[in-house]
Amino acid sequence: MSVKQLKVFAPASIANLGPGFDVFGIALDGLGDIIEAEQVDEPGVLIEVNGVGADSIPVKASENSAGAVFQHVLKEKGLHGGFRIRISKGVPPGKGLGSSGASAAAAAVAADRLLGLGLPARGLVELAAMGEAAVAGSAHADNVSASIFGGFIIVDERYDVIRMDPPSIGVAVASPDIQIENKTKVARSLLPEMIGMKDAVRSIGYASRMSAAVALGDTVLFGKSIGDAFVEPYRARIIPHFWEVKKAALDAGAYGCSIAGGGPSVFAVGEDVLSIGKAMAEAFGDIRADVLITKPSVRGATVI
Amino acid sequence: MSVKQLKVFAPASIANLGPGFDVFGIALDGLGDIIEAEQVDEPGVLIEVNGVGADSIPVKASENSAGAVFQHVLKEKGLHGGFRIRISKGVPPGKGLGSSGASAAAAAVAADRLLGLGLPARGLVELAAMGEAAVAGSAHADNVSASIFGGFIIVDERYDVIRMDPPSIGVAVASPDIQIENKTKVARSLLPEMIGMKDAVRSIGYASRMSAAVALGDTVLFGKSIGDAFVEPYRARIIPHFWEVKKAALDAGAYGCSIAGGGPSVFAVGEDVLSIGKAMAEAFGDIRADVLITKPSVRGATVI
Image (tube, rainbow over all chains, first blue to last red; front, side, top):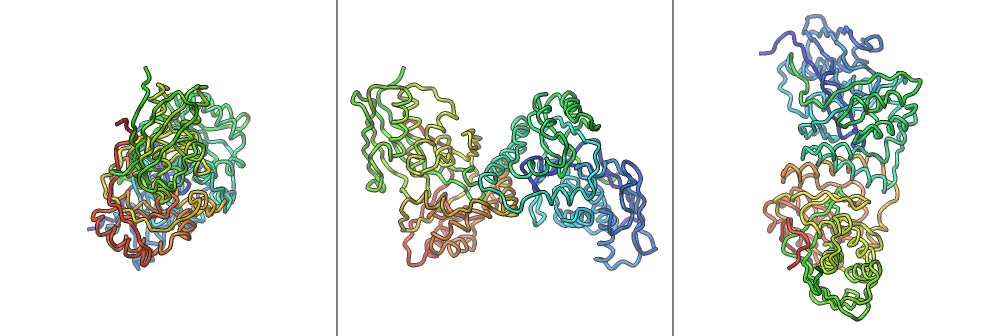
C-alpha cells in the first residue's frame, strides 16, 4: 500500500574525487537536504524551498531537480493529481557539493516510496539523474548515486552502480565565496573534448588505485590516489588561488586534495582535517571561504 | 653473502586486461620462463636460449630483455666479471603473453639475488622494465610487474606497484599463428595520441570496476569489467577475425574478452573456459590458433 506523505533525507556528496570524472562519488556526513512530499489532488508539482541558499533555488518544477523528478513520475505514471513538496536545503547550492543531486536523490526515493513503485537500484539512479539533468544540463549520475546509496560509488553511463563502504578518513572542504552563473554547465564547458593518451593512462592509474583503496579500506592509498590529469587543470581556472589552496592542504598533511565536483569547493582528506581546513581557507587569501570538517557517510537517502 | 649461480622462474602475464593500458597486469599459471644465471670471470653477458620460440630470441645482450638487465647491472655496479645466462623459454614470444617481460622479471630477480643487491620492490620493477625496453622500445612495466610479483598488479609510471591476489577464474587464451615484425612497437604505433573525453571516462569506469572486483574477489564483476574504449578498437586491426573471436567467446559464456597486451593473442575469462577456448579457436577460421587454458597465478618470480 502506498502512503500519502513522506519525508526523506539525502546527504551531500563529492563527485569525481580527482580521477573519477562522471564515475566516482562519495556521500558526506552531517550535511544533506530533506524533502517532504505529499501526494495531493491538485495537478502539478508545487514547490516550497527553505534553508541554505533557498533564494537561489528555482521553484518552477521543470527547473528544480526535485521538482523535475516528481513531474517525470506524474507524466510517466499518467497520474491525475499532483505533489506538494517542501525542500529543506542543508547542502549549499553552487559549491560542488552535490546540492541539486541531494534534492534529486531524496525526491527519487520519496516518489518511489510514496507511489510504491518498487524501482530497482538502476531505476532510482536514472530517475534522480533525470532530475539532476533539469538543472545541470547533463544527466551525470555520480552525485545522485552517492546521495541515494551513501558510501563510495562507481557509476557507469547505463546507471549501473557499484557501492562500497567508504574509507574512514577525515574530509576538509573549503568553499570560496564566489558565484559562478550556470556553474555546472560552465564547469563542463571548460573541459577539452580530446585528451592526451598519456593523461588518460595516468588518470586510469589513479582511478584504479582509488577504487582498490576503497575496497581494501586503505585510507592512505585512498588519499594519495586523488590525482587527476585531465579535469583539474581546466577547472582550476575558475577557482581563484586553487593551486595555492591545494599546496596548503598538502603542506598541512593532507594525503590528497582536488576540486569537489565542478567546484568551486576544494576538498582534502587526511588525519588532522581541522588544521588542513584552516590552511586551505587561509590560502584563499582575500576570498572568504567556509570550511566544512566532515567524513564520508555510509548512509544514503533515508526515509525519516 | 651473495651466491654464484641461480635459477629463477617467472610466469607469463597478460597486460592491459581491457581497460588498464600500461597499468594492469595479471600473472598466468603454468607458463613461464626459467633463467639460470651464473656470475663468471669473463666480462660481458653470454646468452643461450632454448625452449618455445628460441630461434626468434636475440642472444645479443643489448637486444635481449634478460641480457639487458644483466648488462645494466654490470655497468651500474662497475663489476669486472660477467654473467653466463641460459634462458629456457616457456612463454611463446610475440604473442602478447609477456614473453620478454617474463625473461626480464626473472633476470631482475636473479641479478638481485646473485649480487645481494637487496633491491626494493620499485627497484626490481625499474630494472626489469629497463630490460623490457631493450626489446619493446618503451619501458612499460605492466607485464614485468605481474611476472615479478604474481597476482593482479596496478603499476604507475614511477614503478610503484599495488599487488592484489587475483580472482579465482578460468582464463582461455587463443593465440593465432600470425607473425608481426616488431610487434610491440607496431601495437603501440597503432594507438592514437589523443582520445575522446567520453572514451577516457568510459575506460576509467571499466578500470575502476575491475580494480574493485579484484579487491573484492568478485569474479563475475572482474570479467564484465574487461571493456576498453580506446585501445582495443585500434589494435584489433592487426588481429584477423578479432571481433568474431570476441563474439564467439562471449556467446560461449565468457564474462569478458579482449586483446592480451599488444596481441595478437585474445583472452577471455569465465567458468567453462574449455568450451570458450574452443569457440575462440574456431572463430579464427582458417588461421590456426593455439589455445591455452589457464588461470591467474598468485606466484611471481621465484628462485627454484
